Image (tube, rainbow over the protein chains, first blue to last red):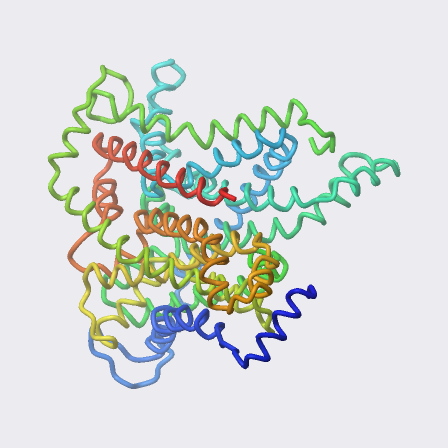
Length: 297
Length: 261
């Protein structure tokens, strides 16, 4: 601490003025999150082990909801598939975004700013409308099919473009790519280039430099991408609903249909498993992703 | 490809251009089709028209949803901004055990699926808190979801703040409260305003948590959802174009505020 700050602290102590301002700083957010985030999650957890018939709750413990969910091959398959799709989307985002982030760091300073803004800009246009834009592209009478047909390359429209797992992955990569690009760019920008030069001077080949120097030093960016791509993707609802069709359903679609069918017990059990999975992953990854860095630790 | 030269190779440049095309093609086409005469909202282009924009103006349901969205965002923005600003001060300016854990927990509402949070809130709002579903309950949901964005925006600004300014104020005899009010706050205000604009924009676009918490009314994303579920509609293209222009204008202001020194 600087001597000025030290003197100020002494004077403050002498006046006997000690405001517990941290209380005011953390009280509102704690109250908000406890009542409107933690409480709902806990209630959901409790609801998942009670006997609930539509709106009638009886205080009777049961594991039936979990048995129903975890005993159903179909639901387990959809849960597993959701995790796999999310992994695929994350992998695709990383593979596409890594060279792109390298490209960004090699532009002149001013250009970097502009190009970064251009990456984030689509992210700020309505999420639903960006998914919708892909429906108009991929549909049977969409731009791609119309274009290929009018060029004489197709006799009848390609049907595999929409309403399956492929379209869910494609559109999700489109939606989440900016997050991965930003996370990787931030990590690459912090990279000490003299380490790269040193590796090259010592005779490392480009791929060796990448594998042994660049990648390990930018791993926090990779983990941050996981948090901002993989985790929201596991719980994706809109994209599979709009472009997934019956074959592209994901686990949250199933939960929502259970809520709408007023099967709250089963819905709670499913939601609880998903939220627990997400919470666990965030806590496991937050250290590796240096998330606390954004708060200046 | 991973050559660590100071300038980008041809392959990196090509890849970069392709990524930008990938990111922008759907949006550009959406804008393009919003002026297309053919009602199918796709090819062929049969001529240009402003009809779809005019139709938007006559859509009572749309105007109503837009007004509801403004109400919800108008209630949520000041609350989330104030709560987020306070929290950002606490996080940036104090050290404590488990701070990393606390920070991750604060970000959780950002990554938990909004629609699940909405469903969970549905169980809590009416039966436990006694609140009937309305614009107000939706706004509460929005506060939970958008506060992390405010925390991040303000924390970014605070992180670059020179603490010696506060020390100088104290050295000149200012009480901590006075130093905060006359030195810290004016310097951080652009960051807080930017946080407000970001929260407002995110709230306008929030679909998940609204779905189960708003009851019979609807916001703009709920309207878009109802239209999109029916298939491709040319008015949606026009709406998308307007929505995009609005968000970009708001975020342009936020960006200016965040950069100001």
